[in-house]
Each structure stands twice: as structure tokens, then as C-alpha cells.
Image 1 (cartoon, helix red, strand yellow):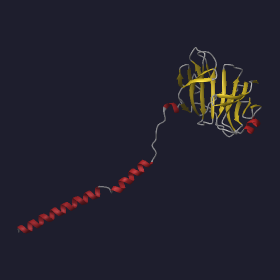
Image 2 (tube, helix red, strand yellow; image 1 turned 60 degrees about the vertical axis):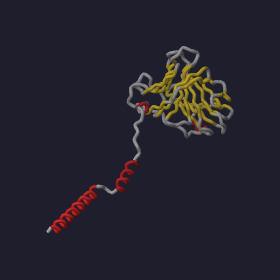
Image 3 (tube, helix red, strand yellow; image 1 turned 120 degrees about the vertical axis):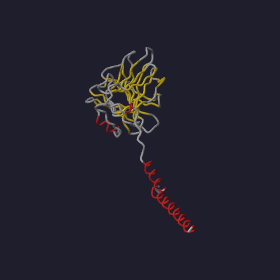
Image 4 (cartoon, helix red, strand yellow; image 1 turned 90 degrees about the vertical axis):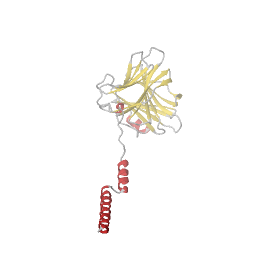
Length: 265
């Protein structure tokens, strides 16, 4: 009788242990399945929010960068600084400038020199969907200091499109007036919805530049630096403003290699 109770108790313990292990096995998922699920989850790219300065389509205020003696801003049409502007904030013998790229394309750099007095603002309404800009200060034609680059997006109601495929021959065909410097730099423009081309026409290490003034204003000098090399043209637009003086130049970085005298339009 005692032996039968012992055997029965042992059988109950074995059955209990088996049912517990079986229940645990059915609840716990297989280890490879867990690893596979993690791999799938981490395969999706992480979404990172852009800085506020890069998505200012609905912002009423311009986005600005400051440097001692200069303040450059990019603002929407409804702001007090529409387009891209540069303000002289110091009463000295230097002048401020804004340097910028449009639509993420680094093959053409634009510069606006504010040659007015302290407190005066110069600029352009014609900007692209993306503007990367910085403020700089010049002493004569020599840049003495500059700030950090900043990028803003979607502030222009009618942004300028990127034009990187125009050749020097096409620029001449589209334009009313052209001038060249030593077969290396060409400036062409037309004045119906005014546009200006700066074309590099020689395979060398130098860059072609267009230097010009618009609307008869001697206090604002515009520049197009064509950085993409032989057979390429950079384009700027100026709406209803006409070109008043212009010249084609060749530069080795910041050092002038060749130029012509300014021509009057």
C-alpha cells in the first residue's frame, strides 16, 4: 500500500513538471524569431526632423545671420526683408556682402556687395527654393571676414529654377549682349525679364566671373562666380531691373587674373 502511494506521488510530480515545461515552451517565442523581428525593425531608416531654419515656408519673419558690420537675411514675400538682403551695420571703411548658392547647386556662387552707408539694405527678390548663404565683410575687393553658412527652404513664392545645362554658345544665342575676357570668361544678358550668364570658356584652374550693376544703382554690385569648369554657365535673374554696367573677369580664387573695363549698357 505504501509502495503504491509512493509510485502514485512520483507519477503526479512528473506529470506536473511536464505540463509546466510544456506551458512555458508554448508561451516563449523561438529565439531566432525575436532576432529576425529586431533586424526588420532596424532596417527602416530613421526619420530626423529638419532644423526650423530649413523649413520656413509659412514663416512671416526672415531668417538672418549676423557678423560684426553685416547682417544677411532670407525672407518670404510677406516679410520686411523679402528675397535675400545684406545690411551694413557699421560706420567704417569696409562694406558687407552676402554670398549664396541656390537650389543646392555648388557650381555657381552669387555675391551681392552693399556699397551704401551704415543702415542701408541691398538685395535681390530672385531666389531659389533652397538658399544657402552667409555674411561677409570686405575691405575694397578683399574679403576680411565671413560667417557660417545657413540654409533655408521654401521661402520664395515664385522660386528661380536651377539652370546648369546652358553652354556658352547657348548663352550667346539667348542673349542680346555679350562680352568676353581673353577667351576665358563670357558675360551675356538680355533685358526682357532680365537674366545674366557668366560662362567659363577655357579649361584652366581659374574661374569666370560676371561683375555688374543693375538699374543704374552704383551702390550695389552683383557677382556670379562660375565654379563648374569649362563650357558651363551660371545664371542670375533680376526681374524688370535692367543692366547698367558689366564686365567679364577671370579669378584665381580671390585674386584677379584678367578683366576688361566696365561697359555701359
